[in-house]
Length: 115
Length: 111
Image (cartoon, rainbow over all chains, first blue to last red; front, top):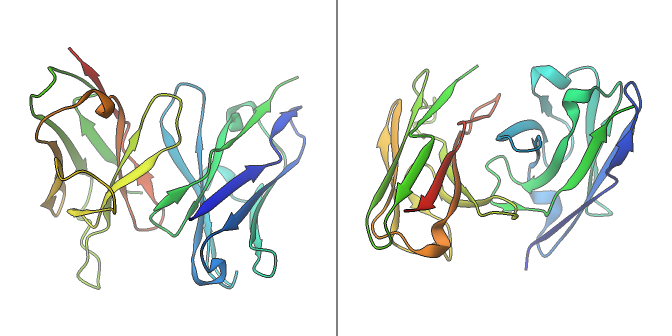
């Protein structure tokens, strides 16, 4: 059974940093692109970033370029999202999803950026 | 970036009746490999999204056959042949070429 479990969310002040993790199981992690999607409270879905199977290619939505960085450790079946210079508008539930086209999703982790 | 526009944004439906959601893209979604990467997702209240359909019309495993996807180029449709209570939630289309973008979401409720 495919499982994706996000962690690392919490309350952070504007300008602060946070690192999210996504633990994957039930499939060959190293064979899939992985994706991050976020959802602001009461709002729709926004694609944030994705990363190739071997980590050699990464893509980001314009609003997070230069501030967020995604990485992966295939030996640990884990995906990461390093978020720096956080803004209030980054407040959202962050989901990791398998593949570029998000066939499986985690339960999400809430990031709140507020003073 | 490709803009995805859904309609309607709110969809009250009587149980057992059909429902239809439109999704239009600001440019053709046909890629150089001849595929069209248009996906549909369902998000039930309080749950994570779930993919229903990929590449316009292919249902994901376990998705009831009352859900169907169609369309081409810039115009796409998700249809539910007979709405059931468990179908309540928000439905999103998503185009699958970088940078990926979602529609605004369509909230389906029971009338």
